[in-house]
Image (cartoon, rainbow, N blue to C red; front, side, top):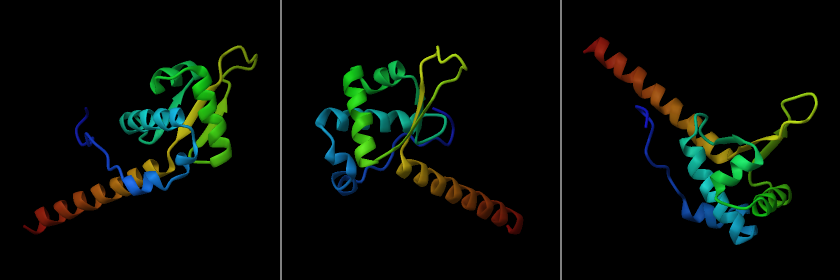
Length: 128
């Protein structure tokens, strides 16, 4: 784990229980929790990128379960899901980007807070 990378994330139970994900089947909720854990550890916090096969591996699920999660998201909109194909011939598998709005928003706040603290320490050292 890199320097400055928090080892854990806040989990707001009431927010989770009141969120749109609760309208999904239990398998989708389990996959989503796995995705949140991987999103926390990813280079771009709050964002997962991969093929269906790669996402199946991250979510510890079958292709059918993953497709169910994606279908439920289309209905409930609990995440941002985008897909694209990298080549012109469409011979490569689609690449999916799945984003947790909440985690991205919280990460932006965390970075701003850390920057403010850094500036405050620098100012104190200059004055001190």
